[in-house]
Image (cartoon, rainbow, N blue to C red; front, side, top):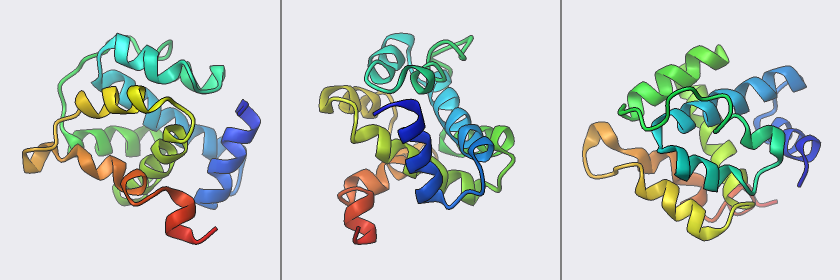
Length: 142
């Protein structure tokens, strides 16, 4: 999958009006995720994504491994994207789902392992709701 196919798929799934809004949503999600996880995990996850997309998790991040919870993640993503937190959460789930269909299962598991799910404030499992439900196609009947 290349950059155009990735962004086109996300634009279609999120029903966004243009490429600019789509790229902003992708950048907001992946750069914030890249800030949260260690550099090595970000590099592994990003390696299978289109180069321009993977760069958001690696090259666009000045400090990896920051500690923040799910709520802070949504606040950061919504601020960068210019969207409401509920919309940002939906966008992030769709972006992670498409990414999960590209990256090896071991890299997806490594990402999950970096995000705690045990505490209510740290319920990162919400990020993987589409993945866990069988993916976009399974939940939309496509």
